[in-house]
Image (cartoon, rainbow, N blue to C red):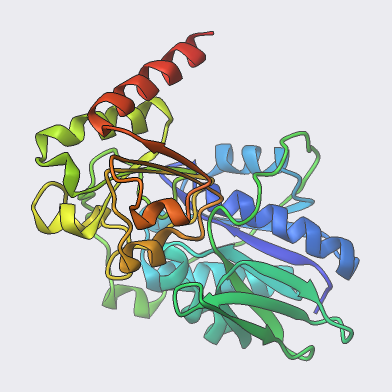
Length: 329
């Protein structure tokens, strides 16, 4: 087993998940302590352009599993393909994004490669024995679980999106290694025929670096239009409080909170969200929090970095206009 660190580069139809590139940043920091190299693994069909982008992000070697059978994500085939890439690379540490795909495929790959696994990690270090140490928030961020891996086993961890910065893209000259993939008898037991997106072209709140969330104060689905306009201007995702989702203003797939999704964006803008405990539990890990509410005593202001006491129907359009003017130069 080498001292190298391998990062699984999750991609969908040629578009790389930002969290996967952020995992490269974490890998580079660890490589400075292990003395190993940073490599990447790409699984899919026609992934040449993806490899070009990853090379710019500083990977020293790229292991490519390219086959028509991998055009659509399937847990069985992807787990086998990624496991083959790991076997070929023989790294000490494997990192991947803590995305929906990452949560689905990582335990399958860990079993196949006899690796220890820690999920949704936010910090890493190398112990005195040379093995990976990881920290992961539990109980909605109220405590941390510190994981110490065995130095004699491969170490695998998923990285919470937006915890690390995006890597610079000034690299070049990565070695590209093709990893063969062929059909297996077990593949027929699980076949992906079609993937239907329920959220349209909107970004998922768990993967976006900017999230604009609306609360029950929006009063209707139609009024959420101003939230969408600000989110689109910022190239962000739209979130909603539980109250707004329960009222039917937005689908529950956009719900942020204890009973919804946990988000950790670089910027979180809460519009008309009072800040119930269950909502705060799902967004308190955001890097910067902006709150807009008419009630100066609203709990959301207790966690906000910046607060605006005002009518969201007046403030949000003004913010949208300011963002558009700033982008126009």
